[in-house]
Amino acid sequence: MMENYNDLLTETAPAEQSDYDKASWKNRKKAEREEAFARVADAALQISGSPTLLQNYLNVQAQFGRYSINNCLLIATSKPEGTAFKDFDGWKKEGISIAKGETGIVLLILGKTYIAKDDTEKQSFDTKRVFDISQTTALHKAAPIVKYDPRVLLKALLRQAPCKVEAKDDMNPKINAAYQPNTKSIVVRPGMDAPDIFRLVAHEIVHAMHDGEDYKWGDWSFRASCAAYILCKRFHVSVDAFDFSNVKTVCHDKNAAEMQAELNVIRDAANKISGGMEQKLGTKNRERHAERRNETR
Image (cartoon, rainbow, N blue to C red; front, side):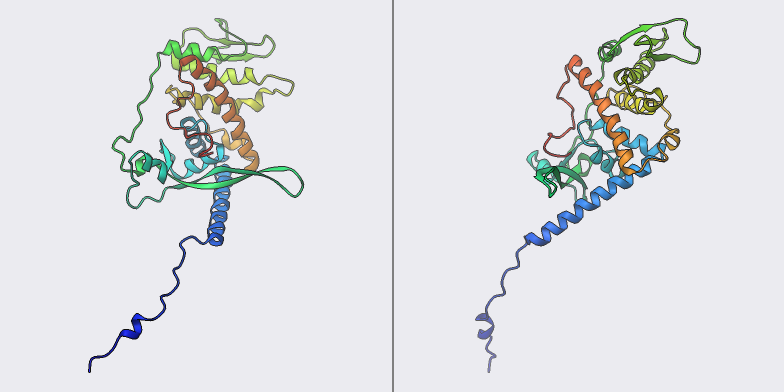
């Protein structure tokens, strides 16, 4: 006699398991957010003792001028060679898929503001997993490099100086450019080539821009070097002459929060100068790889 299986067909089907469990999703996002902030703090501490890691960070900040230092630190320690980041949906809108096996990196994005228990306004953060263009099926991986006429580029830089910039013959043999607080002027040795003038003047403009009641040359020397490096990288000027071996001395006693604050000052100084330059060069709001303000910060 044939066995009857009808009883199996009349059993109640098990309830479908929802892929979206709100509680577990919130916990997962919280853990992801905490891990991202922990990685940021760790990266800041590592940079304070490593010229190579500092240079990696500055390269990323030069590439992504509008990104926060937090996200630049995350990129610098995960995908420093990255050139264009979008999330899955962002690439999909362009008809581009994520390459098989790529997991991307987690960045921080601004969430909503809220009122804390002490009645102060706080900023919340969320996370977003993004993928560099090299992790996609995009055919053209490298962005075109914009080349500027050296004279035009130098003119745009000099326009950002808050003081007079002039050539001076009788300078100390060991000094090629200097901001002079007593005369509120920047003096430059004549006869140098364009990359050297750009690098040195950018450095001194940072000093001049921050000359106030609390200005101390020693406090701004390292910051000015870093900001000048960012500007050189951003405008494709040689960075071969830079040396950041002094980071171990300058920043050795800084904790993570202090180092992040230092990097933020550097970012703001570089962005203020490059923003003015972009207006003069006609490139304002055309950072090739920066995402919209409300996306990755």
